[in-house]
Length: 476
Image (cartoon, rainbow, N blue to C red; front, side, top):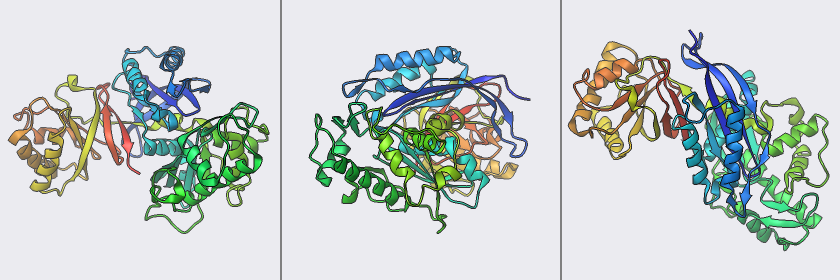
């Protein structure tokens, strides 16, 4: 039976633009996999794209939060009301590097609580979300083809390589439209990012704020940016210290071992991707940027790319410029199974728990003790991945007994420990690990969770028999 309707919220604050989405959803059990998932997701509010408010080189927090409050109100979200159980908020690109970005994250947490993960400057998560929100459906329909997705915004290009709908590697470049800012409709420079200044110096471009950027210099810069994209897609973005990158490689993009020699399908999202697909659909862009940045110029170069230009019309993903926030709303939060070990529901929610390690059914006593020792050093609590525990009595009792032996030795009385299982035995494992309640440990076990390689997780409040779990800090 489907759970009552809940709300999902996605908020994205990028270098150039910000936006929000609100959707209603139910929780259902997938008839094929048997796992709990979001069902009947229906978008109820989509904000317009707005320029991310700035005050000098800092975020204008007051103006940004006025947008947030308006979006939540129009989406029917009551801050603090408890109806929001999934989604997330991202502060991305150059905006994440503003010195007061953390204040925006804190303000969002005040409005939406710990059930919603808010993360700043998490480029691998952004890459994963953009893939999921844009080209994952294409990738699943063509599982034999490798896909490389480029989410090109104002400050960064987030890369994700995937097959069959699964992301196999991620990376991030400081290549985007907003590194050079102009008076809209002209080539008069108003500002250069530190990355653009480094590229100008290396390329011998003398123009500075207040100058007009000559056509030849613009071409030289665009050539260099496109060469970085080519290099990354070709598997050459592995060494951030290499001089060729001039500090523009934020996260190395290593092609996975599963990659084949087949030419990848390249898809786009972000503001620049939106311009490319708009042009493919017959909506011509302005000759000189109306946005005061390089977006139109980068789009025009991509449209003429010698290898990729034919793909823009043949492989059109969903999501467009909203790929990251759409992926955030639908994919950042998983739903646990119903076999949860949670003796005290008041222990939830738990926010930003570091995931300190992974244990398997075959882990010996020394490994169990070592991983729990790492978790013990996290005073606010910690989480562990637990994989491959077959839901059989002997397996659960054996592994749970090893956990119990380590926990009863010296686990702090009030320190939460969360076990994240990929199989269906959460309640029975929790009972075995606490010796059926005789060990007083604030242990929470949630099961039937797809476990990404993430560094942190947030558990929302128990609701209708399940728990929402959000992951951030994804590994590349």
